[in-house]
Amino acid sequence: MDLYEVLKNRRSVRKYKPDPVPEDKLPTLLDAARIAPSWSNKQCWRFIVVRDQETKKKLAESMPEKNPAKKAVGETAPVVLVLCADPAASGFQDGKDYYLLDAGLALQQLMLAAHAEGLGTCWVAWFDEEKARAACAVPKDHRVVALTPLGIPEKQPSERPRKELEEITFGEQWGQPLK
Ligand SMILES: Cc1cc2nc3c(=O)[nH]c(=O)nc-3n(C[C@H](O)[C@H](O)[C@H](O)COP(=O)(O)O)c2cc1C
Image (tube, rainbow, N blue to C red; front, side, top):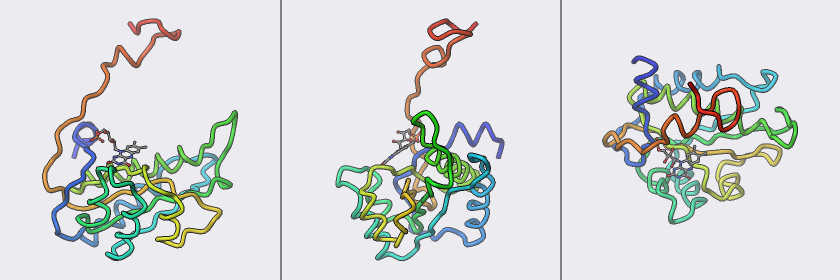
């Protein structure tokens, strides 16, 4: 699939078919995350692949009732990935914690690869970290950054709106229109 097609058509998927994730796809996706750029190439990320229904249920319990991805994590998606990161293995500068960026880039690469392979994902950051930590025995020196369900989408969700380019880009100086 063409890169721009992947970028354009990736969606947050919250409804999944019960079919399993083909086993040969998982290493491909994790490898897409593995080769992401990171602060000083420290690769502070770790991924936990959860297939066990009880663990998925515990992860869903870490999410508020109102989180629209709760059912996908706890019930419908055959796999849930837990993204962890070690802040000490990344950079901190001018109040900016780069482990979040490192981990986010890795997960985004995985998500784009998943879409190219016909699989759906959904960033989940609205959860109780300590409950998610306990569900997967994540050590104290690592943060639980995000979760994502992974599976075959029930259907392609519709496109969410985005700001126009003129709203988010400037030319040369802040506030100047880009010509
Ligand atoms: C950092 C981050 C956290 C998010 N957390 C959640 C979440 O907890 N639950 C959820 O259903 N979607 C979550 N999302 C998905 C966004 O709602 C979604 O990306 C946005 O509405 C745009 O839709 P699209 O991904 O289909 O283009 C999150 C996305 C990001 C980038």
